[in-house]
Length: 298
Image 1 (spheres, rainbow, N blue to C red):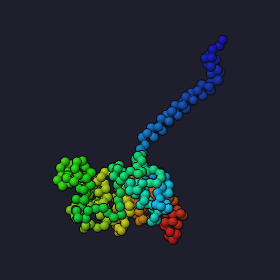
Image 2 (cartoon, rainbow, N blue to C red):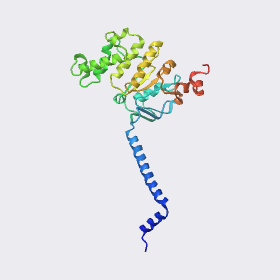
Image 3 (cartoon, rainbow, N blue to C red):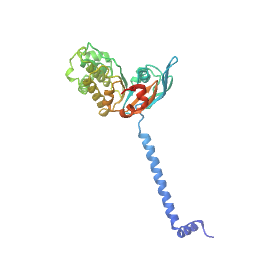
Image 4 (cartoon, rainbow, N blue to C red):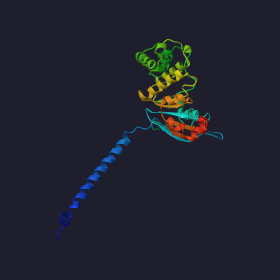
C-alpha cells in the first residue's frame, strides 16, 4: 500500500505549484510572526502620555462645568486651551492638581490615576502650576527666590539648610544660575523682585517651577498684562522648555498673538466640552469656534 508520505511526494511532483504554495505559506507565517512581535515591542516601549483626561466631568450644584472632557498630552509636547470665560479651563487645572476631585472620569499622570489625590501627592509626581498672579516673594532678591524651591526640594531639613547652607549648596547654586540664564534673568541676580517688570516676574515664577524638576507644567494665562515684547520673550521660553528640556506644557491663554507664537496644537472648549482641536489655522477657521469664541466679526 502506498504510504501517505509517498502520495504527498508524488502529488508534489505532479503539481510543482504545491511546493511553491507551501513555501509561500511558511514565508507569510514568518512575516506575520515578525510583525506581531514588532507591534508587541512597540507597545511595551511606548511610554504613557504625560497627561490623560478621560471622560472627566465636574458640576457645582446644577451647573455643569466640565462635561465628559477627554484629551491627552504626550511627554515633551505642548497644547494650548482656548475658550471663553466660564468654559471650565480653570476648573480643569484644579482637578489635575488635586484642588478639586472629579465627579466622573479619570485623570492619569504618566499612566497613573491621580483623580481625587491630595495636591501634595500630585505635585510629587512632577506636576506644577503657574497661576495668573505670580507666586513670588517680592521682599527677596531674584536669586533668593530661586533658592527657596531648590532647597525645599532637596534632601534633609529644608528650612535649616536654607539659612545655613550645607551639603548640596554648590549644586543648588549651579542649578540656580542655569535657571537664571534660561529665563533671561542673570543680570537681575541681586535685584529685589519688587523692582522687576511684570514680564520678568512671570519668567521668574516659571524658573521657580523648573527648580522642582517638574515634568508637567500647567500655565494659566502666563502672558496676562504683558507688552508685546514681554509676550514674545515668554513664548520663546516656553517653546525652549518643550524643545530643549522635554517638558510637557499645558497652557490656558486668551492672547491670540501668544498662541500663534507657541505654534502648538490647540483645544477649544465651550461649556465644558471640546468643540474643536488642531492647529491655530484650523481652529481659527472653524465655524463653531468663530461663533462661540472668536466672534463673528473678524
